[in-house]
Length: 388
Image (tube, helix red, strand yellow):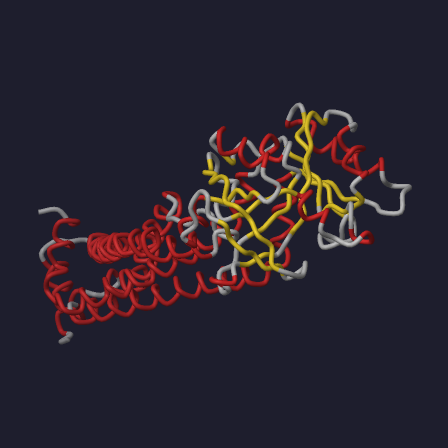
């Protein structure tokens, strides 16, 4: 019988306490993995962003618009091989007024060329191009709201007054994780023709594709220089920087989630430390017997460390077994369907699962260090005299 084997068998001596401790660790790991997945899903847009796209917006704020003529000038900028533009519409379905989804008025001739990750069947795209009131929606959004090809839907905007009718001419799927699968896009011309003269010919932002990803930063600088001396200045960023800039407004929330993650781990550490300390105190006399028959102090310390780490392994494994269905099939699926604009992909990453399991084992070992050291330093005579 080896020390690890003996330590594992010893867990069965107080099964009720071990079960409660394992459940406590499992719940902590479940919470930790869920929170870390939330942060990962929130920030992953920047990681998956296309390296050859540059976004140009108003220098002051994303909310302010740019003149349509800027689009023609951006297309002539060095290294720009293709460009498009879009306006935020702020639409919602009055039949599902609590459901949020992105609604964009786009330059229909080039939008899907600049965003090839949005895959639309050729026949659907062709039909959309011919229909002034046509719309293309993401597959997740279509499923959530029950929309099908050929449906006519009414969308109300929080920015533009009135009811806007659209025909569902296409449903796109995503071929990359950088694409939100819950967006409705329609023809910018349909929006522009319906606006008063003072509001016409304005675009929200311009997106360019450059001839090589290494030129994205230089192209952004070159575009901004074009408009430096004009009434409206611009700010151009590669897509990753543009996506990341949105997170600045939520930095406090992300930091709070990080703090909560640490607090959860500290609670798990206390749970493990209390269980291990109780077990060591109850078995002090037995450690004295082991020392008397030839076990060395390091053997006693290793025995306690192995037992603690087995507790961490069991709790970590159970926590992950709970996390995968809870996050991937429960919370994740709900977020993808109902908040796809923010969380287009929400599932447990292998790296996060490995981190959670490793932390469960490491923290279990850390919780056992003090009790193990105290047990190893006990004198044989004192240990034999002590009664639990």
